[in-house]
Image 1 (cartoon, rainbow, N blue to C red):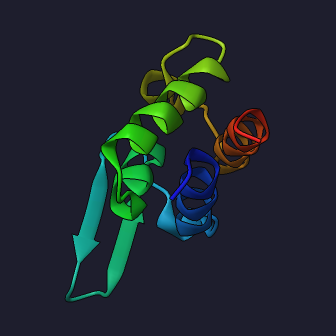
Image 2 (cartoon, rainbow, N blue to C red):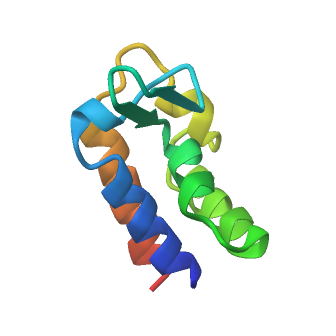
Length: 95
């Protein structure tokens, strides 16, 4: 899997706002059949290669204003749409 493919797959995993979370890597509730991920959690969930995952994380860090995707994503005012847009910029950069 390439870095671009990894970013696309992770983005698809959190495309539904109900599947995206902040302040935690992931959340699972088998009782309620809920799976949620932060952006990096989604990368890890779909990654088959730590090299591609590292490159994808680096690209996401690079497209945020502060250079730290997790800190940026977890800001209380951050929206799901902004996170998806960051993924789109990172995907474009990986092309």
